[in-house]
Image 1: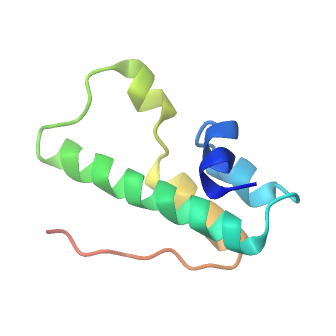
Image 2: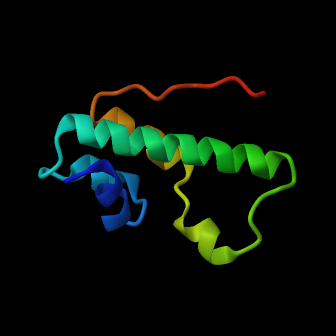
Image 3: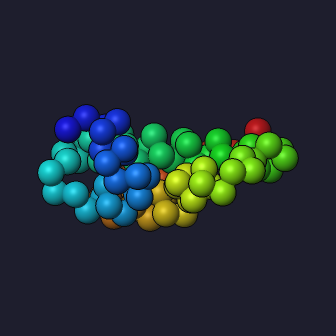
Amino acid sequence: MTTKSAVDQWENHPADIAADDTLSQKNKKQALESLEQDAHQLLTASNEGMAPEDDVVLKQEPRLDEVEEALRQIGTPPVHKPAQ
């Protein structure tokens, strides 16, 4: 299973990706790091007044804390990026 299909299949629920035994550690890490980047970008956009106004988009987007917890579950520390 590729990283993209893993992300699509679980509709961006990081805990589901971390718990999936059919994914390799590498694929879990790639999927979660991709979600982490998305969460950082959404947070940055929100801080700059550009957050999506669509509730559906907001419900589907991963929350940064959920992604960081899932990364910890698979033994990968989250990457803390400085604000730009």
